[in-house]
Amino acid sequence: MNKTRARRNRSTGTSKPIKLGWVSRSPEETRAYGERIGRLLTGGEWLALEGKLGAGKTQFIQGLARGLEITDRPVTSPTFVFVHEFRGRRPFAHVDLFRIEREEDLLDLGILEYLDSPWVVAIEWADKAGRFLPAERLTIRLTHLSETSRTIEIEAAGARAKKILDDLKRKN
Ligand SMILES: Nc1ncnc2c1ncn2[C@@H]1O[C@H](COP(=O)(O)OP(=O)(O)O)[C@@H](O)[C@H]1O
Ligand SMILES: [Mg+2]
Image (cartoon, rainbow, N blue to C red; front, side, top):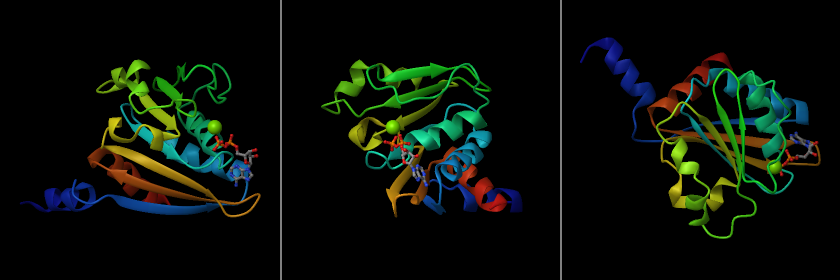
């Protein structure tokens, strides 16, 4: 195996997920972290956001949309519809599963049609979608530390997601 190949396998091998952790001290800081990831997206990525109500999932996704250069309208939680679609540097679907009752409901929403497409898909309450989400994704977990601070943990599974996390780590 040549050197380049060895290096690539070490950084993006599919075996173990890789992780990165941040602490955010304000909503703007959470959006800025989202934007840093958004800038690295090239289309086809799935981002699964987990965390309680008020953890900052929507804030993070607003930053992500900034990184995707979405300017057509503001990003708000799709409360009554489950999916909002946006046009930016890449097509972007913002999904909120807060109101789904069963994992199977996800199939009726047509979200899986975004698989193998250029769409970037970010899903709030992704833990509700469980086994229906693609394994290759970025999982972002937000937790309250205090009223104004949150931990943001990012886990990458699959070569694409790992490459993004590697790039982030390099720029950290
Ligand atoms: N560090 C922080 N990061 C993100 N949101 C924060 C932070 N500190 C306070 N907040 C507040 O927490 C709330 C997060 O709301 P939102 O992003 O809608 O959460 P979720 O989508 O997870 O329910 C907002 O009112 C925001 O102003
Ligand atoms: Mg939300």
